[in-house]
Image 1 (cartoon, one colour):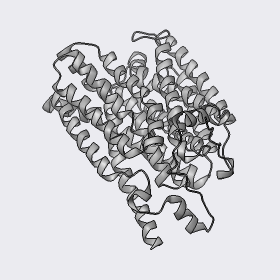
Image 2 (cartoon, rainbow, N blue to C red):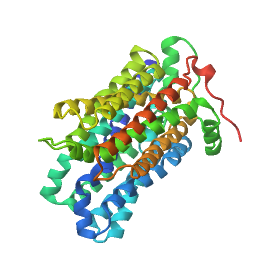
Image 3 (spheres, rainbow, N blue to C red):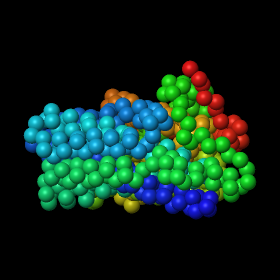
Image 4 (cartoon, rainbow, N blue to C red):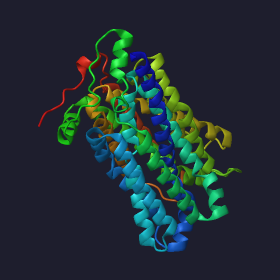
Length: 433
């Protein structure tokens, strides 16, 4: 009987993960969609493409800590289903909107709705999967997300040309609505809700060693958050590291890479492929980093530090050879390598999660996730004081030098970040308030 229950747990968890992966595909799809259809939308209803893009970004950031707190307190099932409905409503407003205000509200709702997907997914990994599977699966999540970003480029442009941007968003709204219903029907917060064995019980049966099941425990939001932010280097070292790394990556990939290559080189092919190359590198690198962490090195920190050193080398190449080596293939390779090495930082989520009880794992990773987007927002904003769309190679070289210095600092913070090698006995104790 126990064997049957265990097999049901190990099988059903994949069904939950697949439906969430489909939802996460659309998180990235929406995030970068304004780069393709933003101009068309603004031409039709007025407004600003930049504001349209940032509306998603800031509303998404706003949901990070609340989504972690709510995932820990109320569970993933209801949370994801409700917020997908909010995202669907936002897509409908854009598709049917005839004014700038309506479209902008729709964009904000999409950001709020899809901002509550990633952190609950990590909660599912913590509850339904084994510890040594977390980093590998998180790498797959990032790869699927980047596939969504690539799909929102040329494929979205073709679809928009065929049926128009409004019908595209109506289609996205219907798809998101269906996903919301499927999530509510399929997802369960804990194996016990299906009458299955917990992961801890399965591990205990396999190893003969008793493992406590804290996956269904409830902790107050305030206690969870205070436990995380008062944990010293366990939280702050990786959080600051990710602030710096993601800030440099988004300043480059998300803002200036296309402009830089257009200004610095006279390539025969479109420079936008440089940005796509970064995404391709991440799709390859993220699952590999997770696999190396879980199965090869059995260390989060070693993998993360290796990737960060490689990413620093890529920045050194970009900074040193700015405006030089007028070879399209060379720079495509450099950009693939950039995405590949930067993606190895993904195992830091697992490194952080290992320090905290599963009951507050959503809160821990959500709080760190805020630093990613703060890094992107702060560095992108500051970069405008150094370069603009007409900047010279020397100005871009100066910006790239700053990005290189930031990445060297990232390596230092990763190096000083502690790694939990002792398991449950070293987990941070929850602060009762």
